[in-house]
Amino acid sequence: MRKLIFLSLLACAFGATAVAQESLGSVTIGRSVMADGKPLAAGTYQVRLTAAQPQPAVPGQQLERWVEFLQNGQTRGREVASVVPDADLAQIAKGPKPGRNAARVELLKGNEYLRVWINRNGSSYLLHLPVGG
Image 1 (cartoon, rainbow, N blue to C red):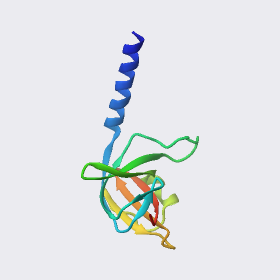
Image 2: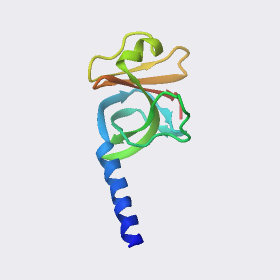
Image 3: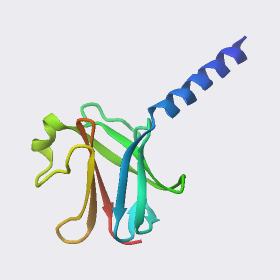
Image 4: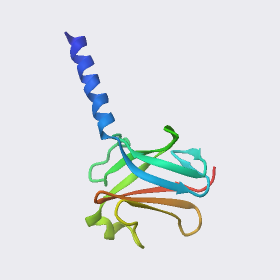
């Protein structure tokens, strides 16, 4: 009986993860960057939001989620995105934001980081990828 309960819980956990993944759209990264400490080549990627949150979760910290960069259906890299509701965006991010359900990729001052900013369904997903690799 315990084994049956464990397998049911395991199936529910995997099912919840699959449902929680959603496409945030497509971005073109014009230079090699580092994502999660690993090289990510220049190219066009589908960005997919996962259900996974980075560990350890700090109480009071803004929401963060892992996203995956996919090409031809295969994950080529992943990174943590800060998730900011549009109502809080003015307090955190400066400059022009991407349009509704659009993305903006820009090299930040000093050419050390590439910011991938995706606006999707009332939230912004901000990723800061070190240049190089």
